[in-house]
Image (tube, rainbow, N blue to C red; front, side, top):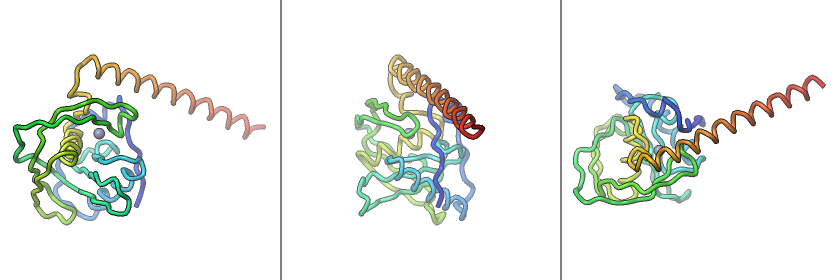
Length: 186
Ligand SMILES: [Zn+2]
């Protein structure tokens, strides 16, 4: 198991389209487990491979929020084969846009076809929070963030704040870096 670095927006890598996996082999199965471990620690309820810099159509989700009764979902090449007309509004967040939330409207129920960790083709019909989460993660595979579903004004405000935060963090890292250098040379 290994922890992966989660890419924070704004970042061009989050806008790329991910490639399908040819086969869920041991490497992809390991990636799924590493992504789950990273997601649990964050903590979050979903994570996609592009968020950790790997442009492959792989997602993991667990909405149980219960450490003792985890319900991990691992999917490769997920596609929506049916979606309900009824919509469901939910206040979404994202590990790549920390501390920001916005209400997004998506189909309430979806049926998804995917490859599981054993490379078997499966279908899952989901609704509510799990359906929201899976659709949110599948969006990442096409370079779409939850803020792309809200008004431009709100999106720009969130991205501007995140961009500012990134610059600040960079500055602080540089500062602490030079302080270390002083300490080492003293
Ligand atoms: Zn996300």
